[in-house]
Image (tube, rainbow, N blue to C red):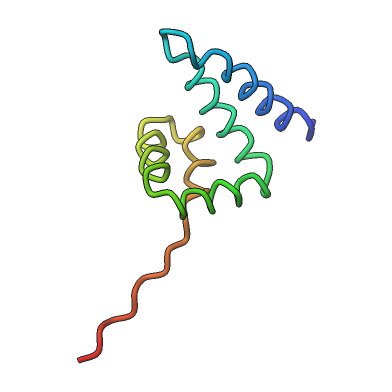
Length: 93
């Protein structure tokens, strides 16, 4: 059962790649679902997504907006990949 999640996630991403060129954005939906499944089942993949979100603000914004529109059960893996930003220290008086 442990292998089912990663296999399903990779299958969704691989299936979505050729569908990116279709006029209907089915490929984006499949790739997003694959990322959600993989980030929920693989801690290493979730850490990689977290680093990418920290590095690329546009990706972080897109995933945050996507997560806000998903049902809570599907949004949870995306929330777990939110970058851990440290707050800036207060300025000197």
